[in-house]
Amino acid sequence: MSESEQYSRNTLMDFIDYRPLDIEICDVTLRDGEQTPGVVFSKEQKLAVASELDSMGIEVIEAGFPVVSAYEKEIVKEIANQGFNSRICCLSRAVKGDVDAALECDVDIVSIFIAMSDMHLKYKYHRSLEDMLGCAKEAIEYATDHGLKVRFAAEDASRTPVDRLKQAFKEVEKDYKVQYVSLADTVGILNPKTTHYLVSEIFKSVNTSICIHCHDDLGMATANTLAAAEAGAKQLHTTVNAIGERAGNASLEEVLVALRVQYGIDRYDTTKLNALSRMVSEYSGITPSVNKAIVGQNAFTHESGIHVAAILEEPRTYELFLPEMVGGKRNLVVGKHTGTKALKGIINSIGFCLEREELCALIEKVKVCTEEKRKSISRDQLEKMITQVKQEQKTPGSEKEKFSI
Image 1 (cartoon, rainbow, N blue to C red):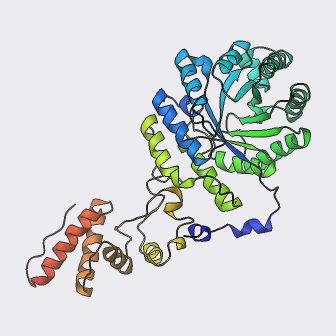
Image 2: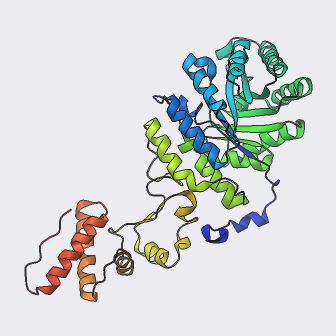
């Protein structure tokens, strides 16, 4: 199947101006995703997820926060020594001991973070901006002196004065040659317009690669991440199934598929997305909502008769991209909204052929059963109904039993 047959391209992109995307993905499932309340990954689980991310072509994997515990440090070190193509990153406060822990783990990148918003300076640190910047610079200098690549991250950047961010980023760029500066929308306050503005302002002020880390408190993390990419952000942060603290983070599956459909970036193996989603769901104990984009149970499920009839002829009539592109499966459901044409197509697809009278009798049973039980009919239930209809049609005048599910 050709690339053009797998999805519909958003041709309206041809009419808007945006900077060509130069991006990489940093997946933070193993660190920020594990900050989801109640979620703790084992070493084996983290290694399995990291291996899948690496096989998909994810450029950077944030493996954890080594200073949290000796076990966490052990896991991060083991991931860093797997020989993955992905570069391995870990989190660090602006503290020398945290950087030492990162060094012991053999990671490629250390993400040193501080918050510079008035809110965090006053209520979290109880310290001045100058004090916190001083701590950050000492930690960055220590890390670079020991050969680590550094990402300098501004927590709560979306509530920090833009000029303050510019000045801090320019200083660390000039004095320490950090590899990345990072903007965190810690409470998910941004929208696509303000994300674009913030990233654009930083992009004009520094030569260092910019990272964007979006939370989903207003349901805009994926949209904001893409807006940041259009504005010049290099590194896009994601989590599998959008897990993370509170409402979660930008969804890996949504970002990767959007990059492909909207911008033609197809270097990631999206066919692994559904399997990875199920893996993380099992490990985290959190199942994505049924209508979750890409990986939800209903992402490729169709009941409406008009939709099903069209899909049987050309799936892209009601599917932006084919399920195979993301390792999913199509599910045509028989229910209250199923029409005769759609039902005929469905029963033919599972190996049955009914005469017109049988089909009319079957559609009537389907509607009665689904309205009474208020749920769709499974394939097994449909096959039983077909058998019953065929039997009834062979014995005219016999009492027709009511089919129950």
